[in-house]
Length: 446
Image 1: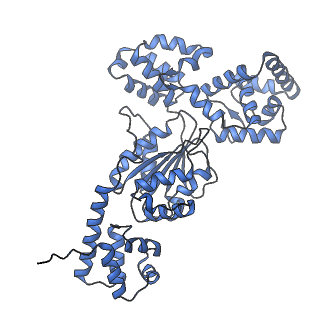
Image 2 (image 1 turned 120 degrees about the vertical axis):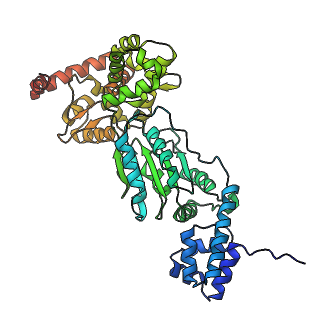
């Protein structure tokens, strides 16, 4: 007695299509499933499409109840086999820190964006931007863990290394993500456009959350965005990435003072209550609300020092950046990655602006210190704002974060000699005397 092997999903689908006398293109038009995806199904490359896709195919083929349920059951079995045979550990989401604090509004924003209606194109993308040390990656990872139950087909993480000398190539990003999505190397297209097409088709048929961390440019991230469907992308970047169309944007700022102190207390655990609230509050203030700086301080306190002693060390501006280091964490290194992205004129303007004694300045003053035209000064300032090294305002004035100013001052002393710094001080005084800016500055301080 012979045992009949059940037909696979691919064989069933092909048999039903032939029985209906439909071409791939005709079935694609009737069902709303792309012809390429249908071809992958019939060739066995997609063994377990999602329920809604199979239902659409059954309706387009006008299947009876028995044939409809059989096709749905074979797709379900294919999804289960795919789950157990898919490579694990690829693009795995990093762990979320236990002492995560604050950012309630930002977490609510990410939740709202990924649960928005199924809009086509880049509207399925949430982009977190902000300067170094603001905790963009930590926030994105926290949000992704919270959203994991809503993405049954996977949550994947890729660091694009956008601020490093050699960012992750788009081709390599596709390779990692396609493998994580279950594409076998032998079926992976060789050219980038074909890989992008396969990637988008896989995302369209599934409910996946892709976290693209540390994007360096629009060109690096644009090919990795979904083309529609229920999958979502949560991306982070130090740059504004203003060229991306239709994305939902959220610009991160420093933590409020109370949340920064709460974060530090959480890192310290039981140790936090014994170190004194006043010292904890002052340390959080000296960190300027940057979560990275707060974590560095917390790690240092956990390992050895009393809070009051570290407060005294950080009060010295000349030593503050050097004190904000713990193991492989160093706040100056985070700033340096952004600084190294700048063009030479913007670097020069950045470090020379550390000489400004006031709270803010305008493009005219930047042009004087940079020795460039006002038009070039605007370009340099735009570049600095884009990377989060300066903050701008609607009044046309710019300002540093306190810790970034200290970094700029350090770069000035390292890259400009004493004679140049003296000449800049003279030029600055002459500018004030000639424009009356010194009186404006005095009135602002008073």
